[in-house]
Image 1 (cartoon, rainbow, N blue to C red):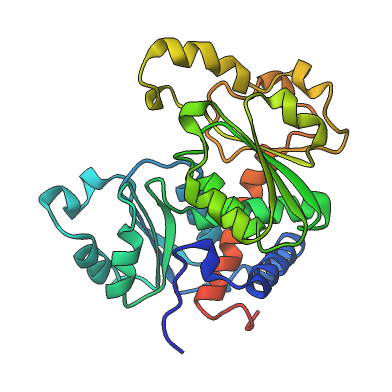
Image 2: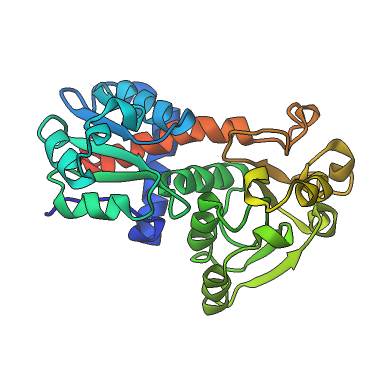
Length: 308
């Protein structure tokens, strides 16, 4: 069997997604069974741009599987600063490791890396393109909270134009039955046309709205992202619009009692800290799920999932 990579969430069949989530659930319930699953294995984390949750959760995942971690956390501390190509970096690091998790600011960089790799490559985020392990995290969290991944109304809010986590989540959820989307964003950050085309291709219902209040009474899931000041052409437009996309306790008054609030983090001010103690707020639970699904992914790509 050849090397298996994860570049896009659609690289995984729905049966594989479900199997990986089952494995993550089992790891959460029986962590001691997995303490030495990756003994003598090494994960290389090649992060060409900053990250907190993704990099540290990969590190924690491999350590809890009994493996070791090496790598770098910024391009300036690697030979990329000397002009080395991504493919050369990956081929070299493949000599020292068994699996690689890579984040890069340029879209498509993990695809280039996968063409030359000698070990499995995991895309840990490439520009505004894909972030498949965040989507695995989101799916696991939703399934654990709702006990299903079908028959769902999902609101995605904030930067829908450049938000790679939103694009990946929609692509994944479209493969489950009876999914409806509310797209909540300012005009400047509307979701790209190709994502709308993909939703239409699957026959999914979707609606664009301009405020959280228009959507929130109908939602099972509210997926918040940051409205980024730097995406606006002028400061006045940002100031005029930004409060429409801040979730506070007043907006939650008209939400369902079993709403699940998610956020890929980091948060700036788009979710009020007053909501953190609301039982519907699950974004820190989501961060924890990220460690366990990455454990399951590492085991799967290394072919160790059936050995435990």
